[in-house]
Length: 485
Image (cartoon, rainbow, N blue to C red):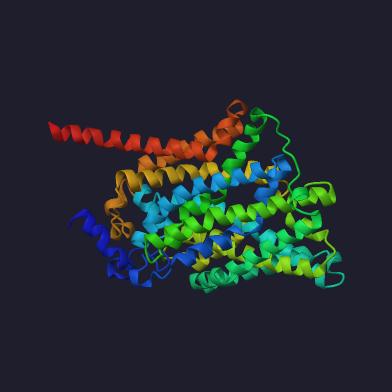
C-alpha cells in the first residue's frame, strides 16, 4: 500500500479500528475524529475567536502598552501586526487537524515520534496551565467585584476573593466534565453578546471622557525610533506569544472542521479583527483612566471598582465572567487535557487531564504575572514564547517541507510503526527543539544578548525550523550517497 493511501484512508476510521483500540497510545479523546462527526463550520470558528479574543488578558495586553508609554496608534499597530503574524502558523498547523481529524499531541507524534511528542505536548500544557491560573484568578476577581456591587458589605468580607476564586474554579471544572459540545454551545451563544458588551463599555468611556479626543490624547513617551524599538520589539513578541499557544494546539479544534475552507475562513475573519477591536477598547478605556483618575490603570477590574454605578458594574462583570470562562476552557483546558492524556492514553483521560491542568494552574502563581504590565508582557508572554516558537518551527518544517502534508494515521497510534524512529523519539526534532529553546532563552540570562530574548518566539521558530531541515538532510545524505554507488 502506498504512503498516500495509508495516510488518507484511515483518517476517518482510525478511532474505531480494533488494532488502535488495543494500543496504549490510543484513547477515545485522542482518536481521529471520523469525517461524519466533523460538524464545525465557518461560524463556529469565527465565534470561537470572537469569544476567545474578548477577554481580560487581551484588554490588559493593550492597556499594558499604553501604561508602558505607547500612544493608541502605536499600540493598535503592534497588536494588529502581531495577530496577522501569528495567524500564519495558526493556519499552517490547523491543516493537519482538519485533514486527518487528529489533535495536537497526536499530530506532534509525526515529527517528534510517538513518545517524543510528549516533550512539546507537556511544554505546551505547562504554558496553558499558567494561562488557566491567570484566567481563573481574573474570573474570581470579577465575581468578587460583582458581589461587592450587589451585596452590602461583601467588599469587606476578608474571604470574599478566595471564595469567588474557588467558585470560578469549580465552574471551569464542570464545563470540562461536560465536554467539547458544551464548549461549542458556549461559543455560539456568547460571541455576539460579548461583542455588544464591549461596545457598551467603549460607549461609557466615550461619554465619561467627553469624546474620542480626550480619550486618545495620551501622547507616546517615545520621541525617536531608537527609543520606541526597545519597547516595541518585546511587545510585538508578546502579541505573537499571546496566541502562539493556540497556534500549536489548533488541531484540537480543527479536527472537528467540515473542511479546510471553513476553518481557514473562520479563523481569518475572527482573530485579527476581533483582537484589534477589543484591544482598541482596552486602549481607549486605559487612556480614559488617565483623564479621570490621573494615572493609567491597566487592570479593568480595578477600573470598575472606582465606578459608582452598580448596574454598570454588574453588567460588565457578568460579561467578564462569561468571556473568561469561554477562553479558559477553549484555550487553556482543551489542549493541556489532551497533552497530559497523551503521556499515558490508556490511564489518563481528557477529564483527568483537565483536573491536572486545574491543579498546576494554581501552582504557577498567577497573581505574580498580573502584578504589573512588565511582569505580564516581558516575563510571562515573551518568556514562554521561547518554548513555543521552536515547537512550531519543527512541526511546520516537518509537515509541509519534508512530509508534504502526508501522515500515516494508523502509525500515529502504534509502537513499531513509521513514527517509532529511535525507540519512540525522533532525535533531530528533539535536538532542534532543545537548541532553539536554548538560543531563544540565552538573552534572558546574559544581558548583552537581551535583544535575542526580546525576539524569543521569532528566534526560536526560525532557528529550530532551519536546524531541523539541515539535520534531516544531513541524515539522509549518507543513505542517498550509498544508494548511488
